Length: 248
Image (cartoon, rainbow, N blue to C red; front, side, top):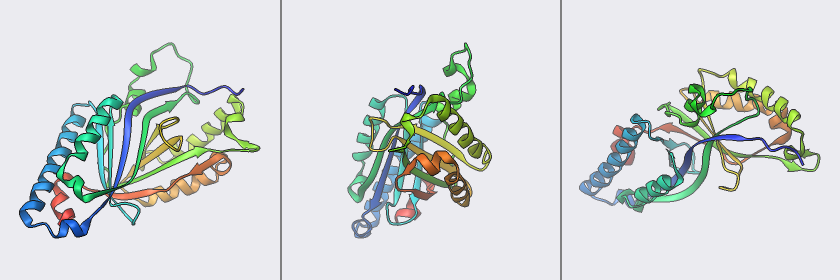
């Protein structure tokens, strides 16, 4: 049996994707539209306050294409808080006009493939803490996708020795580091929590960088031989003070 890699786990993560029932919103009078938009803005401002207090984080984006209209990404210290937050959102008036299209449950994680031997508590390391408990930037663009590692005949990631996986992940990571300053990348683990094994969320002020990094990584053996990918969701940041423009 190959050795399983250990992980450091941080905040719980929930990606919620919705389509908007535009025809139903369109027939509301202006005061009704104002009421549901104001309530949603209050909810999102509360999420910003939680982020400012470093007790969680969030992102809200208008998805490009027909797979969804909106992506709400929520991060919290416990799954109980995340569950309660989802319920709170479902009780907003706007939820009557949102059609769920996809969701993803996971936990922010860092694997120990590239960890250095140390006696220090990794959870007290400032760099590790910034990765596990991120303060999500309000970048202009987002890209989210789920993925697996292949388990197919000779191309079975989970049958590789630890040393082979470490080398592959080291080479894979070098590509990601070359995009430092251009892309923020967040990995969330979902084994036993959702259909896929990981979620990847990228944030950038240039959407073209998503295409560049993912295409380049396709030629790396870790992706070319062992990567299995779900749908890609890309979108544009939707600031809290622009909700009126979006929904009207």
